[in-house]
Image 1 (cartoon, rainbow, N blue to C red):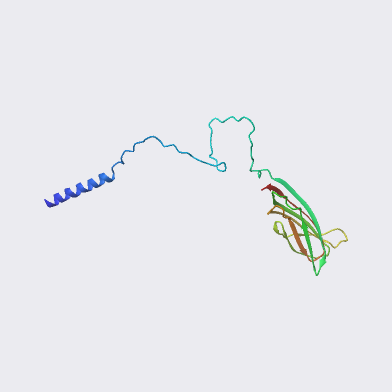
Image 2: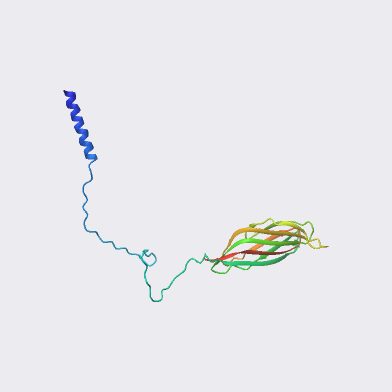
Length: 188
């Protein structure tokens, strides 16, 4: 009999516990809403969507801030001469400085270097766009000993306002060089 009473007591206790756990939450009564006031400055306005649009009369100032979608094409050419001094010639080719308020995005570099001494080499060519590896094209002109080196390469480089794009070449012979950089200017 004790076992039956104990079993009934445990069952009653367990049932009472689960009925409390699974009981629905008390009813929440809705009352009048409390108004909320949002305060924003003109620097951080609240976005507003007006269904059906609105009409505007008079003159309304409009500020366009994304002008990067219409870049200005850029192309500049330059040349230089490098005299042989102590077994090396240095030729520094400078291009026009980037205008104030603009950034130059360089996308392509082309160069031609004429080395006066046959068999001479370009030791280093670097500058706007990185380090370059020009290609030996051959001898220029009949009766001339000049070797022609060329470069035609896609690059990606950024030149800031006031900075001057440049290419420096060092060779084992006197050299004449011409080159062009192309890309586009964007507003800052």
